[in-house]
Length: 482
Picture 1 (cartoon, one colour):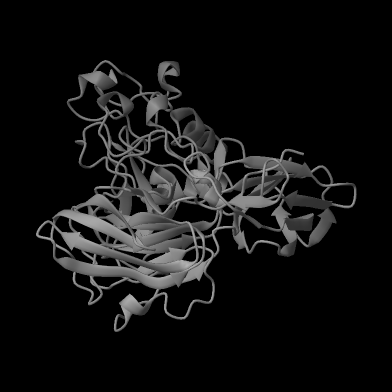
Picture 2 (cartoon, rainbow, N blue to C red):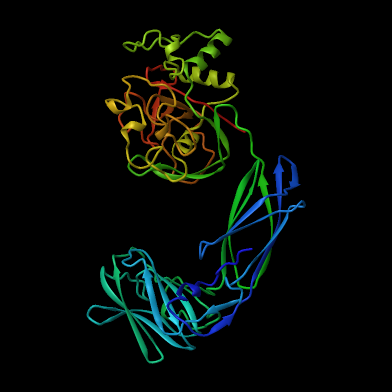
C-alpha cells in the first residue's frame, strides 16, 4: 500500500535540513452497513477513499465479506517514521498575501528557544504582537485576521512581519487590504502542545486560539457502494491514535420515470436584491419532474378523465397548439392552479412547494440562474431574445446548457410554473419544509416565461397569480414525496 507524507513539516523539507523527531502511525478500522427501510445488512466490496487534507494524497481500501476494513497511515513515504526539523530560523511565504480576511503565517523554528513575532508599520512602529513564547523545534502555522491585540483592525497598507529568536531576525513584507473583523483571533498549529503562555498577546480579547500538533492527520473519508448513497466525513486524529468507525449507507430510492431525486438538506432561500429576507430552509428528500408537463402528457390526462382540453393560446403560425402533433413536446399552457393540481393527483404526484421549486432550480450555492451567476441568452427562452430561437413557447428540454444543478430543464423561461403555496411575505427565521400560509388570495408562480425578461428568470424571483387564471405563458411541473 502506498505510504503518505503526513507531517506538514515535510512541506519545507527541500528548503531546510536538520534533526528529526519520531512520530507514530494512526490506524483506522471499521464496518460499513447499508440500510433500506427497517432492514440493515453488512456491505462487502464497499470502497473507502481516504484523502489526506494536508497533502491531497489519496488511498483506498475495500470491505471484506463481513463489511470490515482497516487502514494504516504512516508518517513518512520512506517508512522511517520521522519528520524533518528546520535547520534554520525562517518565515515561509505567508498566504494569501495581500489578504483581506485572514492570512496563514508559517514559522520554521530550528531549536528550543524563545520566539517573538511582531508586526511593524512602514514607520517602524510595532502595531501587533503575534507570538512571544518558548517554542520547541518544528514548523508552526499562525492564522491571523489582521487586528491588533485590542481587537482593532489594522489600516490598509504595507506591514512587516519580524521574527526574532536566538539572536537571529527574519523579516517579511505583508500587505493588508483591510479587514472587517472586530476581534483579535489567532490559531497556532505546531508541536508545542501545553504551552501556557502561547496566547499571552491575546490577553483581554474575547476569543483565544488553540494549539495542536502539525503531525495530526486531517482526513476526508468517502464511503461508496453500488446501489447505496455515498457518505463523506472529515476527521482529525492526533498522531498515534487508533479509531474505529461504523458507517451506514442509505439504499438508493428509484426515481419515478421522468423525475429526479432531490436529497434532503439545507439551502439558502431568497437572494439579496431579488427576494428578501434571505433565510435558511431545510427540506426532506423529494422528487421533481425533469421537464414541465407537455401537451401530450396533459392530453392523456384529459382523455382519461373526460376533462375539457385547454383553450388554444392562439400563437400565430402555431394553430391547434394543444392537439397538433407538431407540438406534443411543448409545454401545456392555459391551465389554472386547480387544473394543474388535478393532473398532479391523477399522475400520483403533487405540485411542488415554492421552496422545493427554488431548491431544484438553483441547488445549494444560491446561484442567480440555474447555470450560474451570469446571464447567458442561449440558455433560456425569454422575451425579445433572438438567441433562444423561438418567438413563443419552445419544446421542453431544448436548452441543455441551462439545466439546473438538480438536473431539471427550463427552470428559467418558457413558461411560468404553478407552485402549491399561497403567496405571503417571506419569514426571516429558519424554516423546515415550509408550505406557505393555509389561506390566501394568490398562488405562487416561478421561473418566468417566453414573454418575461431576464430579471424575472432569476431562481429566487417570486411572482404570484389568481389560482383561477389561465395564461398563454403559465404551465407547471410536478413533485412527489418518496
